[in-house]
Length: 111
Length: 119
Image (cartoon, rainbow over all chains, first blue to last red; front, side):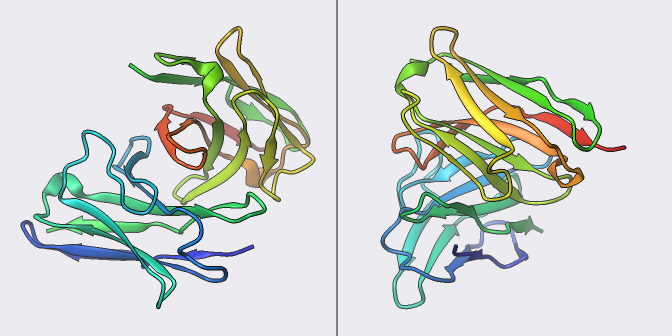
């Protein structure tokens, strides 16, 4: 099985841009789709990016996703930060044996 | 709109059993894959199980394989998670999630139901 490693926490000021990384331990990050989920305190998770870089309807274009094969990692970038963006963010992917894995989560603070 | 409502959580002793239900509405339930995901108190998300829209394929996390079983009744728009031989480490909020547009995308999540395994 593989692991997805995320930074434990990030913080940035309103209006700025933040990037959260998600590094895959084995197997290519580019072969299996990566999703990103946002979980605000006390709420269920919601999807903010799916299939590496697709945005569900209703998610603002301030959210974007990308894949970097050279570092075997995925990234979630949030621009024009708002206080409502605070919460935990999880990346998720899988392998050919249908092992579905979440990253450990990154706590985003907008201060 | 899409709704997923979990029920059946509660407190159970180690070694006991519990069956969770997930009632779906607002979409054609029989056309979508479904996952169960759990979250221990104060911890991150952990994938538990997956079932294809037609029941043809099921997959489980290693941590629950052989103890948990997922099933669905498409005539009732309901998903189930039968949990046997429960352990204290199974204590968590359990979410059912609708797959889409591909199976791995957890497009919509329920509000979750809390399972507490304690003596």
